[in-house]
Amino acid sequence: MIRLLLLRIPFLSSTKRSDSRSMDLHHEFTVNVPVARAWAILTDLETIAPCLPGAQLTAAQGETFFGNVKVKVGPILAKFEGQATFIERDEANFRAVLRGEGRDGTGKGNASATITAKLDATSDTSTRCSVDTDLAISGKIGQFGRGALADVSDKILAQFVTNLNAKILGS
Image (tube, rainbow, N blue to C red; front, side, top):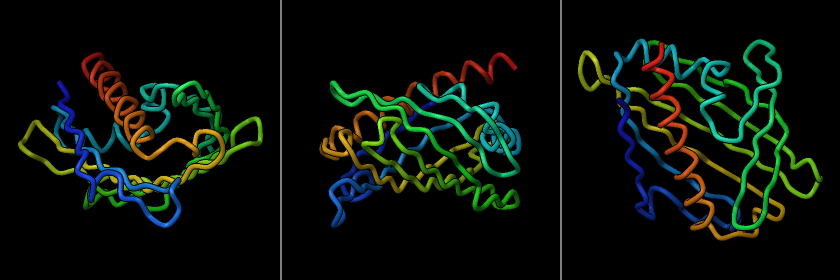
């Protein structure tokens, strides 16, 4: 079973910077598998991509993965096509950094994110995953306030964790 803790503390979860479409998000969840198993699962993008609502992986080339993500914020639906690359994968410290960039298929928006994940064993059979995301988004979806974007992010991650839990229980 996976537990999810969404931290919505303003100075941690949605810090507004000079660009109103940039934000920092912080999420934590717990996976009831040993840290080495959690690492193997969470750094295998081909395995976990189907767990992310709206995401589709279309190709992989080394540490770079290509695909698209559909995101709905309010009445706006955008489909970002792009790539994500592991820029750091430190198995000894169970820390990974993934950089993703995409463009809305209509050409009216862009999104980029640097995602840093750190795994910590909480017991022999449980792992806490801390995820920090530096997100920048433009276009129609970028016009929404950071609160709306943070809410959508929280919902997407909650569904990801539910789907991930089902995948872990099924394997």
